[in-house]
Image (cartoon, rainbow, N blue to C red; front, side, top):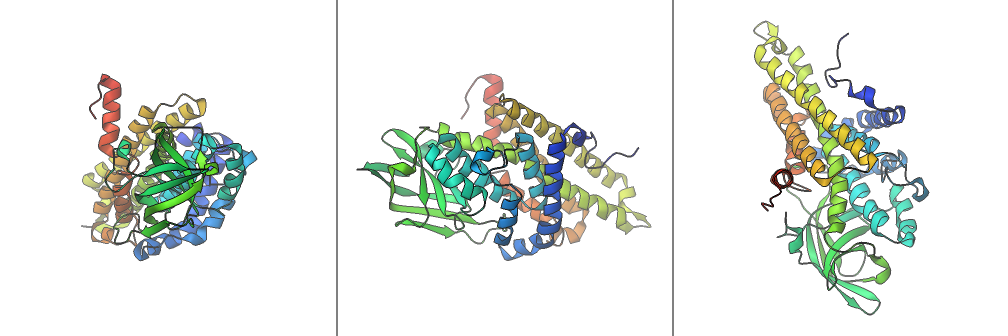
Amino acid sequence: MALNPTDLYDVRSLLSEEERAVQDTVARFTDERVLPIIGDCFDQGRFPKELIPEIASLGLLGSSLPEEYGCAGLNAVSYGLICQELERGDSGIRSFVSVQSSLCMYPIYAYGTEEQKRQWLPRMAAGEVIGCFGLTEPHGGSDPANMKTHARKDGGDWVINGAKMWITNGNLAQIAIVWAQTEDGIQGFIVPTDAPGFSAQEIHRKMSLRASVTSALFLDNVRVPEANRLPNVKGLKGPLGCLTQARYGITWGPIGAAIACFTEARDYAMERVLFDRPIAATQAVQLKLADMARRITLAQLLSLQLGRLKDAGTMQPTQVSLAKWNNVRMALDIAREARDILGGAGITTEHSPIRHALNLESVITYEGTETVHQLVVGREVTGINAF
């Protein structure tokens, strides 16, 4: 029996019936609603906001959070499959869901009060309130401890000043989860984006994540009440805990991008005839396609085991770093190789590899650069901190 070229180890057979149903539902959404428009959205530099209600109706926002807050209550593997199928469409769509779910809804759930959870999570799950995550700063990058944004207590309020950079959803959001230095360490705040002194400026001229909203945030004496502080965490543990959640999803997302590129390159190689035979009949192209299939298979098994560890409550941040490092590099290499197989046609957004390659240049950088994740693994295996 012939094997599935994009699932040589039959990883799908290791999924539960519910996990397969989730994957099929999101795959259908991607095929029917995302792929027909995403090339044009990328060309136009436009995030398809019209898809938000449908994304919400499918239960994709905060999908791993409990049903009592209006969420789907799915397991970690299902969330990973959601990320995989969305990024098969485009990294920008997956980034939107990842930020809303892991970087905005998760900290409210994990670090917020019961009142905050009930105030925000059901509306965020319904797509009525969009969030953004304010951690990275213009000069901070991979060193979030060097945070300049600060919040000071003033009576019953907090007054926040600072700037954040490279913020997904910034100009879409109704609230921002802003991390700031205080006299008592780094703390998180729920900041309405219509608060006086808050402004967001969309970043243009991007060659990556063009179908995504990326912004700079500015906070000039923004005043929020004590009720908007996330009280159950202090220090870098808070934002880094959010990033671990998001990075977990990112280990799955690039598998979808890689599958999209591999599938298109394979189909093209079967049809493209040169010197009286399809280029798929040449050893050079078969070696490339075989290597793509090998690397996709390894990434699938890596993320599935990571998801099982997460569902068992034993997942460690270093394991997430290993998978993000491996899987994003895998997808970026495959996107570039697929573009090469497509030849001249591969430089246009009528085909997906160049779009995925450009997007993955951001994915390999954000939420921990490749080098940072390599050093995390290096620290784990040597016991020596080289940062």
